Image 1 (cartoon, rainbow, N blue to C red):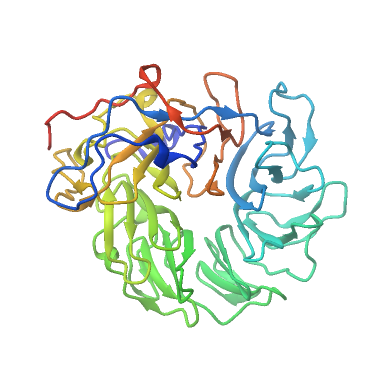
Image 2: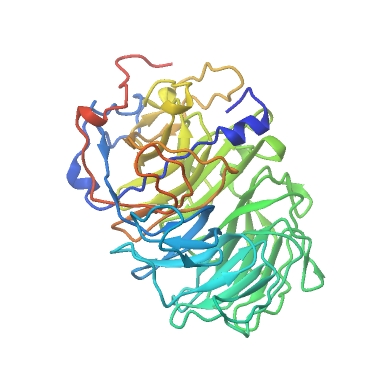
Length: 463
């Protein structure tokens, strides 16, 4: 979004608490989808949208959840909060202490009582080991433990056992400033953030640690500004990283880069020549993969940053699959079996064949979905200050949530997760009905009907 102060954008970064269920999308059968990547505009969908009903989920009494990860039937959620309360309980009642990290059952939404961590600062990132035996957390905390137990020093990275809920004593790396993203393999834990040192060793916003001992490893690429998000390529040979940086290893890399996972060298990645979201007024907020493609979300507040929306790219070469050129910052993505779900404050997808511009914040769309397949091409963008991606392959928008909410903290990468059946949105929202404050699960997708209709289908107009 271009054209107002940065502080105003942060205040207006209003994101919905809506969570979307992923199962059954194919059965819903959207109208008008095409499979060819011809020169036609993106396929127009019907006036009846698709929505989901919220299910009871544990709430935080105050604060916000910034990151979540699913391990089996358990969701681990980290953020800034000190208590949890059952769904439906009034604020300030039925409180259970939880220090910036909790777990809940994905099926019931109930708090997991046996997992009671305690960290003395905010958690920005939660990641699971490949075998699901532990979770790694990163943030701004300097001590960690369990509720009611002794706290020990932890330098903004820690690990907990998913079986016992205990802090893992053998894993104790440290960095000197906040961690915003973690990627874990069987042998290595990669961290990205705002730090400059790792266990006394120079590490410019990127570092790697031994998964068993926590020892700092020799992997030492450098970023000249914040790293906000990372994802491992499916073949394990390289990490795709995003943020607000302009250089990696001293070479130009404008908010997006591919880095060798062994030696830290900067690799070619084709889509980086197209998107330039970096600096104080832009960045790549989220990166995720479904094993076949990389999905990214970004924002551009002003030039030279140039892309707001979501893109799909080949995970090895970086060649663009498609882009959804929707105006309004995009924060997080999750790929289901047939669609890519997005949390954002989108307000204009008209040049991608979607809804027309809605300038008022209460008409911004907080949770949307796009087809995984190409259905057309992007139209010309005549809006002042926005880059023109006309002619690029485009998907179709397939879902717009009807639930709006407000959260007046920073916009944030990450937080939209799922298990193939449910997607859960992180939260900390002031919502119009029910006063939910925290994560939300949803019931299966269903036809929305006119009661939830918010989309104005394009009828022959293509700009």
